[in-house]
Length: 333
Image (cartoon, rainbow, N blue to C red; front, side, top):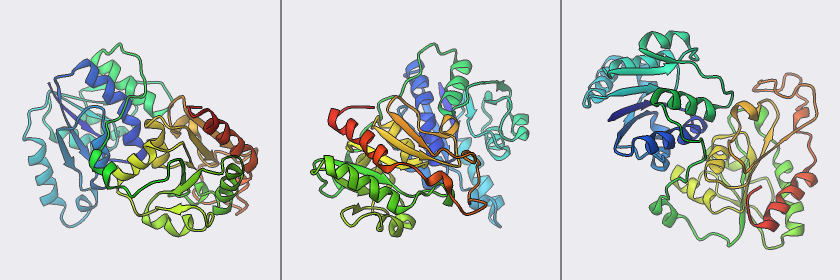
């Protein structure tokens, strides 16, 4: 069987797709999988529990420019190198539905009630799903489409040995901090992270702290605490995965790397204000979420309308105590 999956973005959404891919791999161990993905997220597919044969790069920015026609023709040629038995659009946008159309697959499947209803004109299998969380929605689509009866679980993700070996020497025991995120309203202050670290250090004098993330987050990460090792902007995506895999715990804002930590089955402690982890948070048994007690929580505003950021007001000692308990046990939450 030849399968094409379309999920160009984003970081967290692609990681959320891994449990569904694991179900598909278990059902069809001999199938071949190709994947349409944005270039900045292509290396995430090295960790797919269903090995990806071809990464078909979706140059969204070029498709929105003067290079539209040659890029579209190149994408079309690339898609038609293989006669797919089934194409699955997990993105649910008009452009991703059109990519499914270009594939000439026998079956083109997607969500009934897609994010953009116009995407559905390109599907000949429309599947209605009800779960709220993205992981469960993607898995429900795959289970219905392929008549899969296996239980949904977080799969073991493959090790990228090259990325692991290329990391610098790391402390024996460390906690990863993820202080960055795309929304200002989700970016908890550096001093908030610093207070948690100092409280943990009181109970775990030998614990190191490593801040990770993109180059754009390096300055913010550098102000957390002078004892934090700042690796923000110094790892590739595969290196970030391997850094997270060895962590005692991962503490962070609502962000793609936090989802990766959950997928790697690390103890995750996430801070939520304008977003809801029930819908978009990391998925798995090892995840613990913290909310401020304020009426505006879950507002979905990228910038706080009144500038108060009340959702950032949390008890850092309480959070540190919970992290310390997990570190004491040396196991999941």
